[in-house]
Image (cartoon, rainbow, N blue to C red; front, side, top):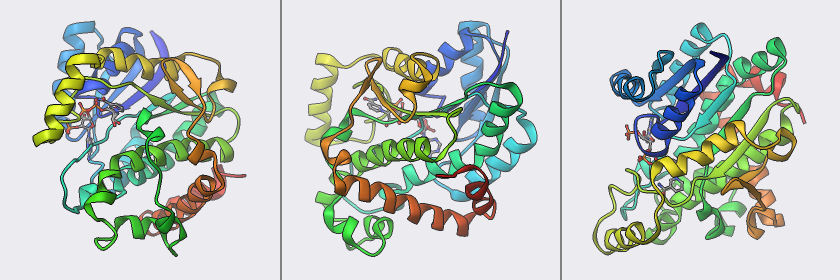
Length: 310
Ligand SMILES: NC(=O)c1ccc[n+]([C@@H]2O[C@H](COP(=O)([O-])OP(=O)(O)OC[C@H]3O[C@@H](n4cnc5c(N)ncnc54)[C@H](OP(=O)(O)O)[C@@H]3O)[C@@H](O)[C@H]2O)c1
């Protein structure tokens, strides 16, 4: 048995489930299978156990749609987890409808950020107590190369509020929403690498275009287009999950720290993200999120002060 704890979110379906199975074959002391409900996690664990023989998987419930669920999750984790060596933030939705709704707001990456920040005390303690280098693995996508966060939203007094407002969210803007959430994921990893000590490795990754449940809500012509693409060149979820495994245990810490990996290599991020406007968007959305989180969970100011030092 390997004396480490691994946590995977969205571990009941697609790439996350396959990644959890791969981790299970490595026989970690604890594999935390995080799903929307305990029932879903238990179902996933049953399948993982049947296919790998792993007996160390445990369920945890997290609904990333609710800030309160993230806070409750962190409270439970602080009581039950004595270490966390690998955190895989995989859960996400890609909604392709034309109307504004809460699910289409920039909520996805914001909630991933809150989840990571609230788990930082356990991760930092793991590094210190066990002299190891924990990894925070955030699933992004190659779609980061196809769009950006609008200049008007970046120039607005509050970028996140603007991006989430009904007035701003025209169908054209919403068409880029999934991409923007994946850009924010990469920015998060970049920021964490800037602010966290060197013995923590945050890394973002592209799993490649895979067959999974991700596009299940897509309808009409777009669904036909995706079907064609899936038939022609999609990877299986298992193949995509190998990119999570690479980012979680492969490569060299110093090369992966703050990086974006794709096909098991570190890739330069998009020109826009590297531009002055991209950097401004990264810094501004970070400050806005910390301010927002401080209002949502009173542990955040202490975590920021203690662990996130420039
Ligand atoms: N498939 C691709 O081509 C592709 C390409 C690039 C990046 N990705 C990324 O890969 C990751 C995994 O996606 P996938 O392709 O494996 O899709 P998937 O099969 O739909 O899996 C997504 C997982 O996220 C969970 N999830 C979604 N919203 C959640 C919420 N509010 N709270 C808790 N869990 C939630 C889902 O749970 P439920 O089953 O309960 O909904 C599911 O377990 C995502 O980050 C996705 O953006 C996928």
